[in-house]
Image 1 (tube, helix red, strand yellow):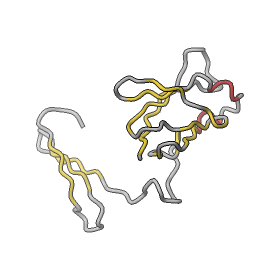
Image 2 (cartoon, one colour):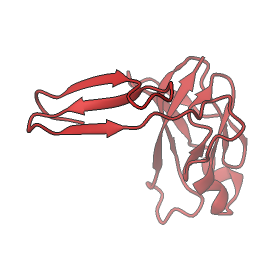
Image 3 (cartoon, rainbow, N blue to C red):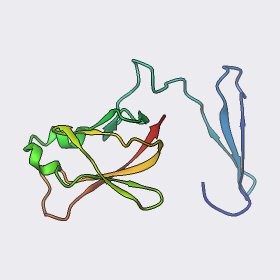
Image 4 (cartoon, helix red, strand yellow):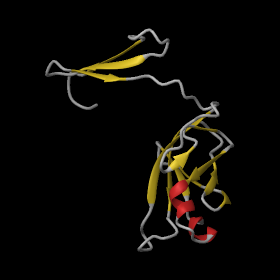
Amino acid sequence: IHGTRSAASFADVNGDEIPEMLIGIHNGGVRWHQGSTTGIDSDSQPKSELVYPNPAKVNSFVRITQLLQSGGSPNCTENAQWVSLDGRTLKAMPLSPGTFATPGAPGLYILMASPCNAPGPNVQIKIPVIVLP
């Protein structure tokens, strides 16, 4: 949520022992964001349309479903890289087609990779991934 004079607050409003986020906005409105119990260690973690698991653990792996669905060769992922929020770049080591090793340090990263069926050489997908300890 962007804007001036916004104020966020976290509380267990509905009594389910999971905090919700309420954001008061300048025009008098309130935005409600429901909490969720799905965690990184849960076997029932839903898959996103682009990458899973997200968040991921350090020195683990993530899969990019868009690269897997395209049916191309594993060579299309050679130029994949992780970019941290401070601008550092790390080569994303492919473990198999569409699967990459996660960075060794926790943080928020952008995984940039070229889809196998990209219409041009400069087409990249950019996916934010949270890496936890």
